[in-house]
Length: 321
Image 1: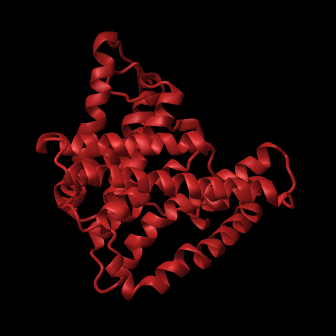
Image 2: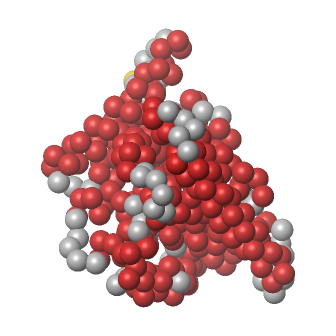
């Protein structure tokens, strides 16, 4: 281990700069050598985070997100970032695409999600030897493929035919579904309630659907009204869009935790399918923002890992799982 002194005044600035330099640089290099950007993003975060912290202790070039951000701030920022990514994804979803793909998309986000949940939970119970409640929770979490993963992979693979549209819809729509499932399982575990207490579960699902869908539609209507009536100048349209997404995300979470992801998705889909106002300029801005958000998310989250955590993993079981 090599100990290096770091000036406290510049350490935060260096770490924040590294997050964006490594994030964007990894995506550029991945495009150059034609591999999925997620692989390089995760590798860059691990090298700049736990590896650098272990080998060069005290180095200003070692990223430690826990020193940069308060835990609550970090979790809230990650949630908002994912909400913005889902909003951008929702803007790209056109109902016309479902004319030929609605059956596979519906099956993927219902039957396939349930099968994934069961298989993942069973595998976690027998392979990782987790307790039944934790195995069920892990299975619920693993339902999610998510736009942060599927989007970059689709951009790299560029599948032909309807498969790309199907995977795009599934990757975006499954995110709030998986989060809802994970939250409900966690609530059941945390309050030690019985699975036959269906009333509380149904109530939570109802609040999530009503709050997420309702607030998302209201936010979309507000933005559409603002744009059609020219209440804001052109240079403020993207900031106003950003403001309304974050507001809808936070307001929905106020009524039901994690329902903000549904509100962001619904708002994007509603705006992407209305005909009164052109939102292509908003979509272009959000696409550029998505690249930065994905870069920062993967670098920060992978940099939070610890070497001892990685060393404790049974890599054979991880590979099998």
